[in-house]
Length: 150
Image (tube, rainbow, N blue to C red; front, side, top):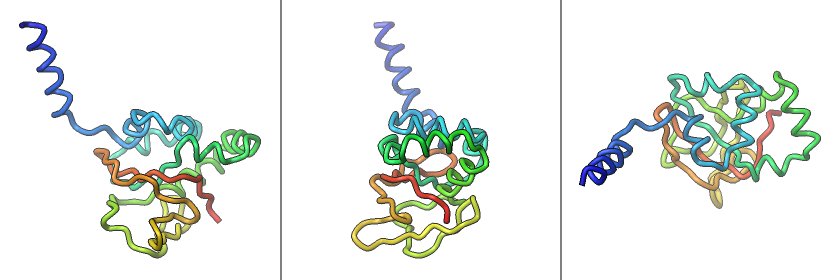
């Protein structure tokens, strides 16, 4: 009886806990290991754990696997370029899927992403494959390719 009560209390506590930040949410999802490694290498973990809100177009591990290994290794070693690429995936504010409109969107990196909504949502050439993964400081939309600033 006592163990059941403790388990029920713990389970209830898990449902009432506040959502995790964007980084913790991505790590918990399990399909963003390369993104987490890249964020750490670029020194952006604390930024994306910050107040926000942020909208992150997050490439999966499979998306990063499309980048040739030599190019990815070089990118991970070039902090300035890596930071530019990663911040190109981030938009200030919390934009839910229902609020997405076609057009140009300014990124944290400073360039603009092109969002299209014909035949599914695309961000530049990447397809948005999952939307509205809510974190306490923003939202994650999963994309199937790494997008590069012009």
